[in-house]
Length: 231
Image 1 (cartoon, rainbow, N blue to C red):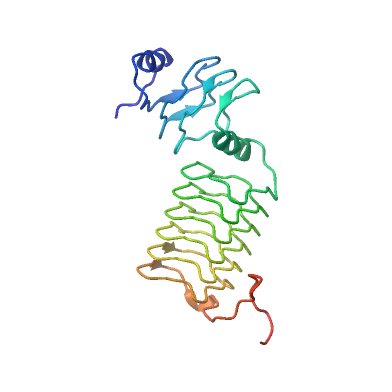
Image 2: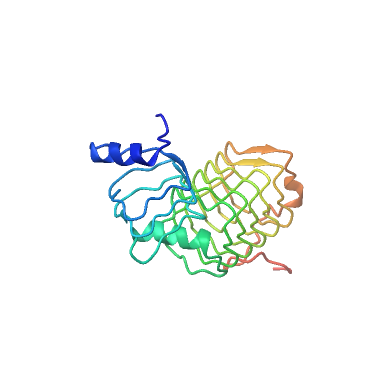
């Protein structure tokens, strides 16, 4: 699909009934426009002005929303407004249990201490995100891209990380007890002190990652924290 590089072309195609609109726009003025129901998957909307725009039902899969302008009049589905808030209003310890953040771009986001238990982050971009001490217990992280993300002391107990990209991810001290790591990619991943007892590692790709520094034993407390003393 050819990227749309002009606002007038974008609006013309939408008026003609096209809904799959992959755009590459820098600083576009889209104030007050109607793009409801459009599928903007993979678009570049760098520093777009979307104040007052009707974006009800619009899909922003794999679209960066950091730096995008919206206001109270912008009609945006709750999922994408939440994504916008996460990347534009840094706040630690967010309460995001059960939230659907699938296919969102959260690269570089500050999610330290966030409660993401049971959250859906399937195919989400977490490149360079900060998730130190975050609670991701039972979260769906299938095929997540967490390249260079930091998850120091994060709770990933029973999380689904099948097919995840964990290259250069900092998982030191993290709890991965009973996590599904089938097909996950570990490439220069920092994993010292992490607890991965009873984790599923079938077909996982380990390159320049030393599991000898991880805790492979079944010695995790029921509350999800690594057991530090004797039994």
